[in-house]
Image (cartoon, rainbow, N blue to C red):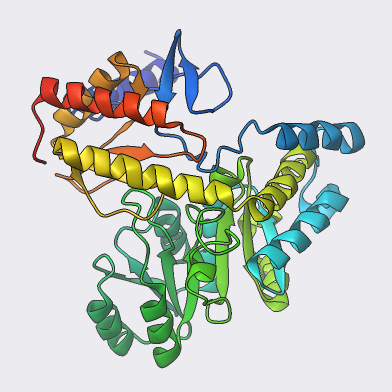
Length: 396
């Protein structure tokens, strides 16, 4: 047996263990724009697990902006930003993001994962301490690991434990990192309390706005704006995907922070820059977010309507104020069976299992769009009712 065949055998054994544990994952293919109704493989379904919160993916203005950018600047930046990769649109987008976020400056990264890895690993090191909520996104967890700083994890939104850790753990630099909106639970971080503790104990505060950008705040700038804390948060990270309907990420803060990251963040330095079309899409999306606040209103109305409908059917749904609505099922097998039954009834909702969420909390991660109609939502509620009866999971 050759080495290639031996590697295949090893991986096959590991995959079989994943299957036996009920955690095997596979890809489903969507054939259309990510709108409220899509063609999944060979049939139309209501899409309820996309992060297209404002319905901007596929918006004509965004598509036209991408086409114009390709005509003017081509298809790729071709090089890293520090070589020849910085183009006019990079500067325009960073200036627009800084205005949008109310900060001195902003820096574009190629995705949220790379942004969190780059920022955390460049700001702190072995002599430092990071304070992290236990439900923070995997990119934050991996950024902390890569930094080699000491990591003090506190129970989800437990301010008492966070304060005790801040009292106990010393270091050259101390950084609190938290999701503004938690990606699997959809709840909002208690940022005023966290910002107060950061001030009291001399820690820098970094907020991941991936699931809040475009959704929360008077202008859609996120949880930091929602709570009026722009001057209290040193670092804001967010994505250009999800509610903004494109691709990429940003870090917003001071001019000195931007200059520091350009010189130290390896995930920025050693990668080809974001393509022109993606930047043009983000610029147009930011304009729409500020011009059309009614999109956020429709989104929040849809969330309230759907959550009330799920509760009336007997599902375990936490109090929600964001587009992420977790329907807790518990057992992994029932969660995946529920997902399959929903799909058979014309509704696509992905089942979420460990290790993405803690054991015993497997769930259907429902996400709402501003562009879902009441007809879409009623169809989905009817499907939930039928699937819940089939699987026997009413009552949580």
